[in-house]
Length: 218
Image 1 (tube, rainbow, N blue to C red):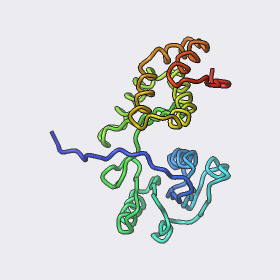
Image 2: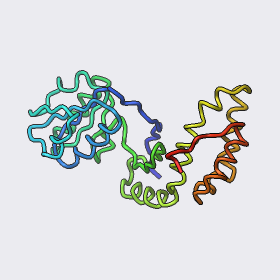
Image 3: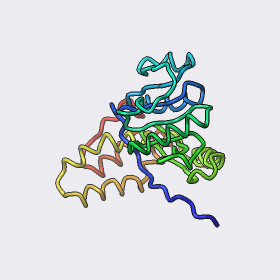
Image 4: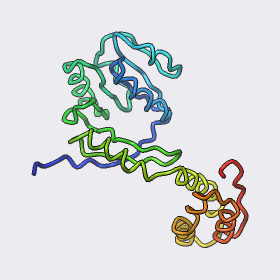
């Protein structure tokens, strides 16, 4: 078997960070949407930019051919053009400036790759085959995503709601951790699945010693 690149998985906080997409077509659109939804400051550089990208109010448009200076202030860059020479130049320029760079469908030119993602509210499950097979990543996303129902999303929101309440209690880190472990392994998930609000409230009250307002969650 060939030696594969052992990528380090991470979730990046891109809020207010400048992220540049080189390319203005449909492939670039998907990257722009994803970056914008993550709170990044998105700048698109391309001589031609499709209307769908132009319609995204928060995105800055630079309508011109790519030059190295265009990425000078970037936190990360994505090359999403249909021109191999331009994509390679973006990759080399980013490497020279020590900027994270992804070149769509060319893992050999990337300093990071973008996983296939299952998203359910605050839950994000990233799936990667290390750049070997995006098609397999997509298949895995579909298969695994089928097991992650709405009840998991609601559970995540509930746990997020009670987190500050638990952390404010005595007992320290070990005790707080134990509360959440007990909850996720209790009947709570099944009660949410059945929309049994009374049982959910009872399980939470027993675990944290107080009633929790679930308005809007169940």
